[in-house]
Image 1 (cartoon, helix red, strand yellow):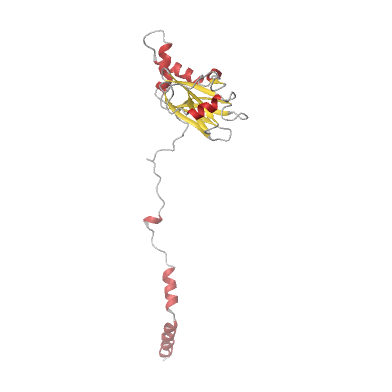
Image 2: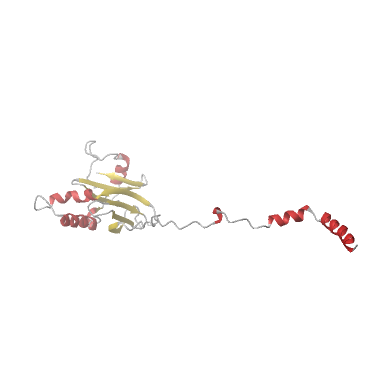
Length: 209
């Protein structure tokens, strides 16, 4: 008799429960662990970060007035590679504000080639060759390699056959009228003597004879 009274109450309670309540309980259920949620294993085969300076072999730097009369520029030659005799030397000129106004890449053979004029015999040892390249880098920015004026007052514009490639006549004429302009000389290979100067007219470094 008592059971017959309780049964209708249970049926009424079940009918009053809302679908939203049932759905909420489903959403809060914890999903099983998946591969996407697992942390990525460490890649021990991945190469370690490379230090950009790790292969630097030789460095030569100096400050010299060049593109501006009031503040010197930084001249830098950095030789990088696996060995002194097979590396690459980057020549850069950077202003006081940090702007690179000139960059050229030379090879170790470019620095070594002129050694033939100083050799006492037909061959040189590896140690002698390395010593010569080190000497070239060390003396690359010697005071004698800077010249003022950049273009001598008595100089004349060279003939086409003697002028360096891309020689700018207007820039040359402008430098010719500037006794304060400074040129920098450097040797590439055996006999390729190059001269550069800052051109106020062109606002860039130019090659001159």
